[in-house]
Length: 127
Length: 205
Image (cartoon, rainbow over all chains, first blue to last red; front, side, top):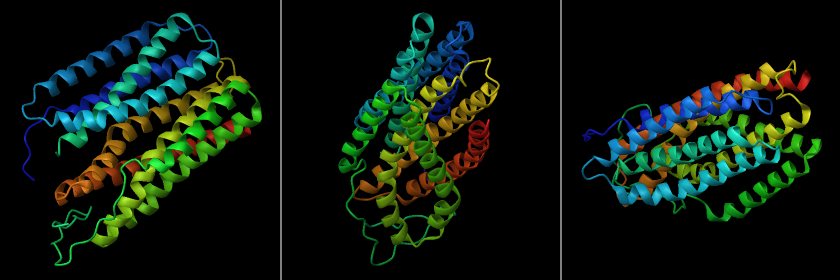
């Protein structure tokens, strides 16, 4: 199958996902007790940077099927925002607040954006 | 369908004169959405109640479904799918995979959210709890499975279905994506063995 060269979107997406999941695991392993936010913030920032780099690399691809990417991605985004919202709810229910809540919320947001990018890319690359 | 669908074993099989028919299907079965909504409503109610039985029920039922589906798909259905005839594989795929699009994210969300609330209720998420290490181990196993499932398995699932929706599906694309789906299902299935070890330890104390 002849294929045009594409940036490693899946690999970078999985890396970003892994970083943000480690941030979430780190927070979850300490909550509801006091947790030092430094490692979680560093992991979240690294994950967000990889996500942005991934999107920028994808944006530079000529002739990419953006219509298909957004067609699939928007529904996946809706689904994963609901999933992230459910996880956010359970932390709110247990009175998570302040810094840990902000980091957890941003981590869930990065998670919820990463999955649609991965799904949308995998579909659109074969369009 | 003008093209034959390739086998996951790697061989591209020639198009038969009578091309396999693709049943009409929805990538996301809309009939299942109300069921998902009901399950999520039960999850919200269970977490809000913070009572042991609903939380235990949601976590055990969701977790059992997740584990069994992963193991069954990875080690039983996956190898069978690889050996099916082309028409059978196409029909099986178009009937099974749309359901997986709804079932897996739902059972995973129910298991994780109810599980966190359950561990809060039982106190196993406190670092002083003797079982805390096992709880953290379960987070790590789930994290690894999530990266594989969300990075490889779920995108392949959606992409196969999207490809099969096309008037002229590309057999090589289907082959590549099905391989990816079956191998990643096998990997998450193997990880589920670790989940079983951890959860039975947590249940017995």
